[in-house]
Length: 300
Image 1: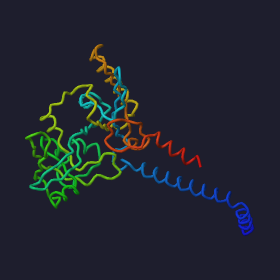
Image 2 (image 1 turned 180 degrees about the vertical axis):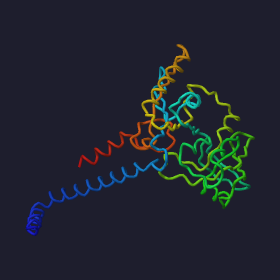
Image 3 (image 1 turned 90 degrees about the vertical axis):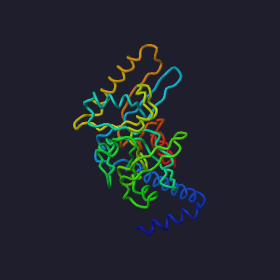
Image 4 (image 1 turned 30 degrees about the horizontal axis):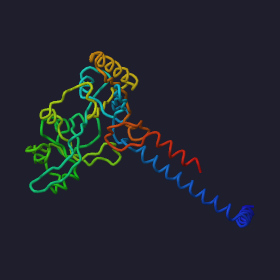
């Protein structure tokens, strides 16, 4: 029975060689695209799943509107972070990652370019980034302190036994090369993290050397992540954000042309199924690209 099917198929292919070739090539191409699609999907769904509190972590995102622009941002203001920390009971913990700690770091005559962010010790309460040495509760509380990853530490010092040693941050301002004391060494950041860094500088340094305006409308440079309390829904937290935005916008008065609205984004949705946002801290795959490759696959 089965053998007859093969004989029939061979006859059809032999008689209609061009048509059969087109069908075989089309089938092979569609299967290749389908396998590629499945591979991409599998990889994307792994992002940020290693964090213990992943199901309760959200990022606060911003839409800034004025007479000329309507911009969706992955960032939000330091003023918002302070208000959430002090007044929003739905939030268990909040931490802020700020731009600007990238650059050249010097140990003696050795200089390495490292990728970094300004951060607070609360980062280690929100995310699962284990320290191999140092105290996660205090590592980033003092100005001019820093945490370094194991691989970066080995590149610069040849060892991970570096607590108490210092690195000079080169060329941040003319004539100024601030020194940072290493207070923590952490495991390398997983490739399945949407944020990638090799060093973290204490935000207290940034605040003392460059005092923040703490402006409600300064929404361009900081990523705010919140751990919701057990039992609190994203909808409840969103209601608190809506209340803050309405009050803060009203406080600016009728002369203010910039209107800020706030939204939330689940941690596990930042890389995949993400809306298109400016100021992303890492690479993402917007929802529209997902549907694009889905359409390519289904078009065969």
